[in-house]
Image (cartoon, rainbow, N blue to C red; front, top):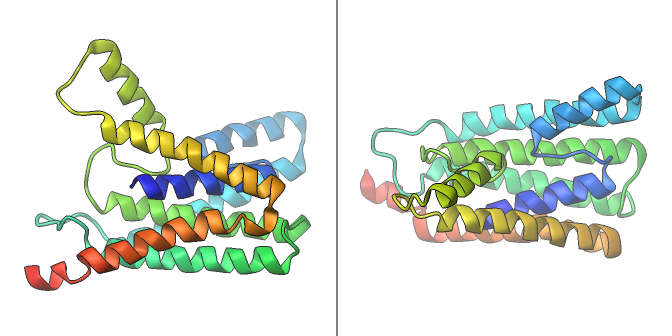
Length: 217
């Protein structure tokens, strides 16, 4: 989950710095930007936020279909989650190809299209994580995670350890920093910040958990 959140941060940073100044996972932020675009009459910003929103929803629907819903005997790492992440990886590979072909970084309609591709990928990831059936676990929408951590600190609530949540929040910032540095200073390498960490997660999931479903059956 921490590595997946790193991917989220990097993707959002690449999108914000090179693909139109909008987010690919923070849909509440994009809704605010859409309102700002409407208030200022900025058609380009409205178009980018709209594309990101629609594509994220499409990715979420696709991810939900692939990953399914939590069951009564949900394994530690369900195989459909791995399948969904493989689909996400394929989407990111398509992004990397488009990024390279367009000249790294892209511009115009190509940048808009690649923004949509990344939004689809993070939508898939969001639905895949829901398959675990763990309340409050997310790698994309993290305002609630931050609120919970701060609330626990302020009330000295130690009933549930916050280490996982803090690690996820830190990974988001580190991923965003990595994505921004590469997108600005080494744009040809920017897709690696997305594809490589996700690829490692997929390899680990297949190696460690793929055959456990067969054993459970």
